[in-house]
Structure formats: structure tokens, C-alpha cells
Image (cartoon, rainbow, N blue to C red; front, side, top):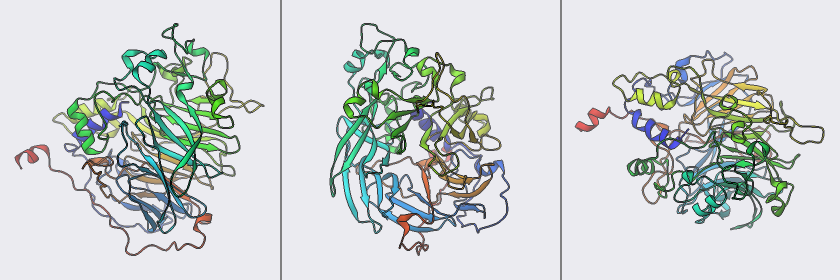
Length: 550
């Protein structure tokens, strides 16, 4: 899916979308032993802007603990208890992409640099900062140049170093020389991703001590006179630089649409017609397995997750030793499957289930945008077009897309290597566990989002587009539910929004639950703060015809 076009269209349609409910209450629900009765209309709205916000449901089956999250349009990070009350918050200077609370009580945040150049594809950050419990900044690291930018996600390693996702610029000439189809090379060049490891140098700065580049592990079957030439199906551990299945598509945006996207916070002021297709992989999540010394990351544009070896040196990572150990989600990318074999669609938040947890060693991913074959409107685009018609009664089930959380187990041989058969794709064929809404369509977030296995076997799910967090049992019963009520509309120095506004104003990149005995909480006051932070109530804009009269 071309998410930029999706946002342009859905935002323009929202004003005429009259089937949303008008709930304005923002009350905390009390703990109950009752099983929540699921009703389709509870989550039917695509954006949920008029849904009840705050704590919705909290049963005795809910897992005790605290949930850490950061409103996308805010400089703040919140810690709430399972009663939905804020017990602590950190206020930084910059818009926060993602936060990780450490066992010493410090918070490490991926923040958005104010003036990073070049990159414009969404999820940009450029800065990592560390704060103590009281909110004092202890460390500031910037990685935002004309040729590189950290974005989307980080992972703190056991040794205190930090893994980060970084764009890098490949010029049009370099891309063509490597065998990429010139018809698919943006005029501004392309931005493939790499994984870097940063050694902090407090209080300011850091050293990149390790890196792995996607561009070192490509294959192409288009031009035998160029490097990296080979039969793609014979190189399943390399990335096809000219993939046939996946990637961005659709008609390019006009300058007017780009300007509107910048104003609304979906693109940065760096966005131009020349770079709108530069972001070819858009890696959005990274995680680490200390036992295996391996890294997993997710590319929603290619609809795949990848595992690489972290035990090798940077120099070794450039060669065959740095080829993919494993991949899953879209085997047509390496010519060992068809469209029918694709499993992942614009996925987010890949991670291993920790040791000692049910499903330990398996991988968990949020599968964002699954199409339903044979639906009345088998694409988001068809639904948007219908919404622009005089009849605005578009239902989510008519869109034909839904979301799911998948848990799957990569097959390994006796030597610990990931198995792949001759001419076959990487397994498994099916996930070991999954969660979907009872009617499929009411659980749908086309972008961001995440999932986390809890120690008792329950799973915390973030439906990011709506800012909805909910906990389900292995039997898929909802036992806790909370909708983010906080919006701060952080504005950048140039006057543009820092994050998406309008109907996605409550959106959340991800939420993380921490156990009551988490070491970082030792000696900390976790009573609800008084007064509680101010919440935000969305007001439905007037219909277009009224707005024109005014």
C-alpha cells in the first residue's frame, strides 16, 4: 500500500464520514469481574476520534503492571497503572517517537531532531536522549546528516549500547550502477536502511561501533553486466533490488498534496516530488536476541521481516557472512512464492518473545493491512472512492482490510541455522497463534501499532491509528482496554505539525507493559499524580458545504 496516498485520501474524506458515533465522555471505568461483551460497533470507526477515551475495561484477569506510552503529537511520555491513571510522566523538549524505561529508572527516548535535512518519509527521529526519573537529561546523541538519519525505533543492548535503524542516501547513479531499474529510481536517489550500534559518550555524543547495510546484500536479475547479478530464487538470503511483489506503488502525489501532507504532519518539510519514492524499505522496528546474538527488523514496504547475525564484525557484515539468516512474510520478493503466499502486509513491531514467557523464542508481529479477497470493496482505495460519493455510509467491513497479531516460530535445524528447502520459501506456512477481531474488520490499523507477549501468556496489543491499547488472553478474550486521551499538538519551528493531525490525532506508535516488580520502579512513588494530565476531546468539523459558507 502507498500509505502517503492513503493518508491524503482518508484525511480529505473524513469530514464527510458521518457514520461515527458521537461520544465525548472521558471517564475511568472501574475494575470489574465481568467479561466484556464484544460489540462490533465498539470499534467500528477507522479513527475512533469520537470514541470514549481513557480506561474502558479492566477485569480481574488483566495482568498487573504499568503501561508506558508517548502520544504521537507530544513531547511527553506517560506511565499509567491498569486503572488508567497516570502515575508518572517525563516531559522532553522534542517530539518523541519511542521510549524505553531502563532497570536503573532512566528513560531512553528516540526523539525528533528539529532541523534534520534530506529525509521526508515518516518516522524520522535523528536524536536519542536519556532522562533520569525526575526528567533531567543525562545524554544527548544526534545522528541526522544530509546522508544518514536514525528513525522509527531503537533497541538498548545488554552492554548499554543502542541499536538504531538509519536511512542512508544512494544516488540515482549508484542505484542504476548496482542494477536497479532506472524507472523505479527517484530523482533524489533512494534511501535503503542499515542497522547501526551506538556506544554512548555521555553527556553528549556517541560512537558508531558496528553497522550492517542492506545495500551490501542485494541481488538483481535485470542486467548481467551490472554487479549483484544472479537468479533471484537462487539467492534467498539476499534482497532483490527490483522486487516484483511489495514496495510502494500508485500514482505520485502532486505538489499540492505534498504541501497538504506537510501541513498535517504526515510528511516533513523536506518532502518533494523528487523524493516521494526514495524510501524503498521503510524499516520500522528493530529487536535483539541476546541468546542468539541476532537482530530482527521489519520492512513494511517489502512486507517482510529479516534476521541478521550480530556476532560478526562490521567488515564481515559487508560480505556473505552478513547475508540474511532468515526472512518471512512475502516469498515472492525472492521468487519462491506468489501473491497467494504473501502473509505480511505493511507490518510493524517485530520482536522475540522473551525467555521464560509462553511462546519463548517465537516471533510476534503486528500485521497491519491484510486484504480480504472477494470483499465488496477489496481495497482501501475503493472504500475511499465510495466515501467521496453522495452516499457516505461506508462501513469498515466494506473496505476489505483488517489487522492481526501473529506469533510464529522460525524453523531451525540441529545446528541452529534457519531451514529453507530447495526451491521453497522460508517457513513456517502458518503462525502458531494469532489474534483478530471476531468480525475481523473492527480491529484495523493501517499503520504504526504493535504487540507484546506478557509473562502470564496474555498479549498487550496497540491498535495505533486509534490510540487503542487492549490485553487479550491466549483464548482471545479482551480483559483490559484503554484508549489514549492525550493530545498536545506539538508544532515544529516552521509551523507544521510534528505528527499526523485530523482524524488520526490520538494515534500511538506503540505501548509497552512493565511488571510491578520491574527494577526501575524500586523506591519510586507510583501513586496517581494529582491533578491528572489534561485530556483532549475531539470536535467533529462541520460538513464541507457549511465550512464553505463560513
